[in-house]
Image (cartoon, rainbow, N blue to C red; front, side, top):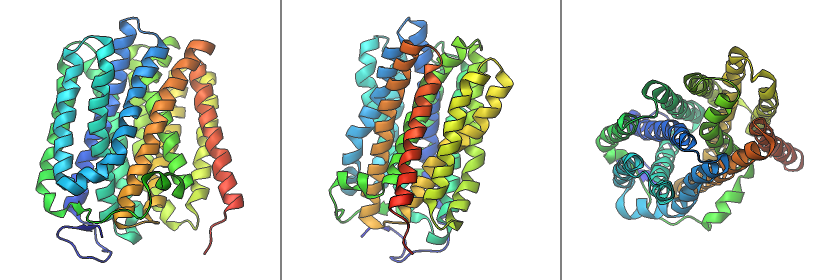
Length: 394
């Protein structure tokens, strides 16, 4: 059974703040690493004359690394302990993150992405497992809303740092590595409260992918749109006529929307009879927002307004999907399901940048919006189908 090392075996109704702060520190490192690294590396590749398709393929290595790491993360945490595994992942991600500056060969960035994003994925899964295991059942939406808000803040802080530091020199890489290393402090302090995995999950890993399809598909869309957008929106914005800082600030505004929406959405999900209804509503908003991007692409202010609301709904798929998952499972099964959840996120990060980059090469700049609209259309059909054909039982 999976329990906090210093906790009781039954569900608790108060928040373990040291555990919350440790998980928040870890997810902050994940958010900033992704939010800073993806646009930074994409702009550097664009300046070097790399095509959008190759940029998308290189960005998709993040997802391949995550898919490779996800099935083994629970085993590593079982063997080494949750907090120790997280600390090792922080060290490896910081070192490999600096490697992008010192290794200039484009083709060597492919294996380097595998190392960097494999470590980031391990940190992502275990922080998510830790927070889900520690969350009081009746306050799960609030806790996960706080957690997702910080993840969104990290996504917002990354592009903001990028807009301030630029893409030249070692400074943006050193800043990212330093922030990641700072996350080790609260994790080390709270190591005694980290959850222990001392039993095997009941199902094979891949079975968890299909166990709660509305949740896992939600995080797939989140990964495709969030990572594809972070990777290629700077290029989309520059080609639409915005400057590099203006494009980066638009990403920051989308991150602000992410941050502002998550706690209200998490609390709302706790009050709804069927969380799938809320996921469907957010899919509709995501679809409408994607279709409106070509209409507002010549007006920075209108684009900012759309991205503010749209970004909150994109990240809401993660928050509400994770809450839906956490309410269904406990213990080792929850750990395995969290790994499967991130696995689906990783699949999205592979498909998203590659599809968006190829669409921009084939159909022009507006291909960015059309592919994202297609992702939301797919999820809308799935969520409506599940509600109609698999109604929630009391």
